[in-house]
Length: 80
Image 1 (cartoon, rainbow, N blue to C red):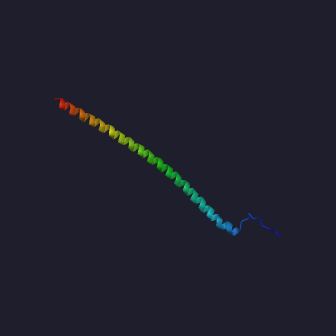
Image 2: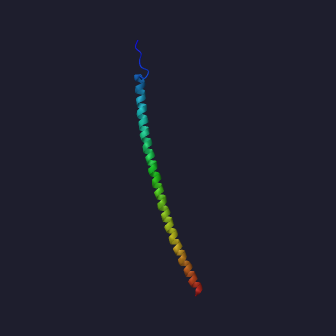
Image 3: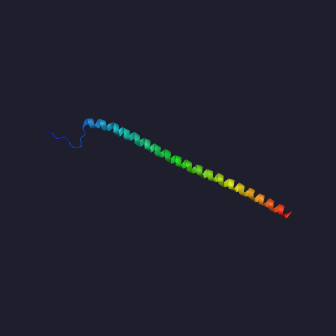
């Protein structure tokens, strides 16, 4: 009367489980790569927003300078 241990897995089940484990490992690897891509994309977007913001700020400075120049010209023309 030999009793098999309860933790022993039937060989058929083991063969079926193996592809599932391999598939899960591939999916996990894919998920990790996707997460890394997402994090890099978010960082790229953040940097692009900062660069765009800097560009807009520079445009505002240029426009403010032009506005000051025009206002000075208006004052000069009124004082004549």
